[in-house]
Image 1: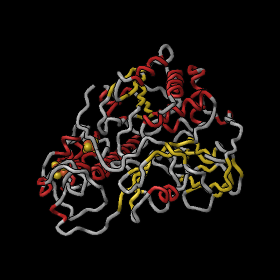
Image 2 (image 1 turned 90 degrees about the horizontal axis):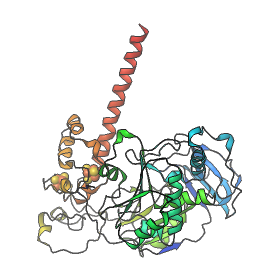
Image 3 (image 1 turned 180 degrees about the horizontal axis):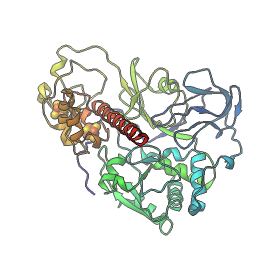
Length: 468
Ligand code: SF4
Ligand code: SF4
């Protein structure tokens, strides 16, 4: 297995492996939008009483994936835009009822596996699945070419796989066995940092004869936990069909759904970053008030909060009040708005980068304190090549940047911007702090839009020819 590039991002604020349970909230604010999902089919009415685990909304564009109530309570639909609010909370769980009349097609040949897949979808476990190449939710009734299960989480500062696995070996291995029961001959690749560790031996021992997972060792370098990178390194071709990918929390959710028929309502979320007093893991739920978490854990008066990790997380807007259904961590960075005198001489000094350039080349190594300050104006590419060295996709970010700067979108396409996995490592190491990742995301969207327009035009012309 060949992996290229990568880098160990080492920053202040790494969450400790301790998991602390958050106190029960007074209200829950469930955002209707997450990175992949939009729950715009509302299944409850204003003022309705719901139980924990009840379906309160669905995403019609993602196989009717349900949004489940993490607690029982009273529904408020119009209190906060973009959210369903639950108040008068109680932990009461309803009787789990999977409405068979809404059951889509269960393919005959799937037998028992078809019903199990439907159960995973209904009980919220399917939301943890990704397609390795597209990142989207795979079809629960589709046939994958392979499954990748990853125990790694390498981006600072997301909830770590080893923390989620703590004391849950049995649930994890049983989850793997359930996963096996959904498949026929397709391989399961289990990604681990060390396949000779005592933990790896225990997993092997537990699943022997029940699940056929091939243990794959991957070095602890960001972004080797990226499913797209892993699929390429395993030699799995995109054209050969979907590749299901799932992390530890997904395997635990599978076990819960298929062993005890219970919905997965608990989330382990990390809170880390230089502005956090004691970075830690939190046992909480989707919709938990973000402000309560920040009040308890941040030290600085002005902070920038990212939903996700430092390199790929998205800034949380003031309108977002609760943890999203896909939140895996909050990264909190001190917000410094003032520029520094002669700051432009100091890229890589106070602006986290592994590259020593300009005056920062004179310094000795020391631990960096990350902030949002730009400390000077944006400067041009200095062709240091650091971005190319770390890029796991094997493309040349500096070249793409130069093409984009000159508006040469066809050249950008030829230079294979499509291979970019949006890991953000190039932006991180760039001493000029060029926003390479966001440039490439925009370029990919533009290329896709142009292709779609060409497809539509061709379809229109074909229709006109057929009508002649
Ligand atoms: S964001 Fe894209 S171009 Fe930059 S390092 Fe990652 S894969 Fe390479
Ligand atoms: S884009 Fe940044 S990291 Fe890449 S060559 Fe230019 S200055 Fe160096």
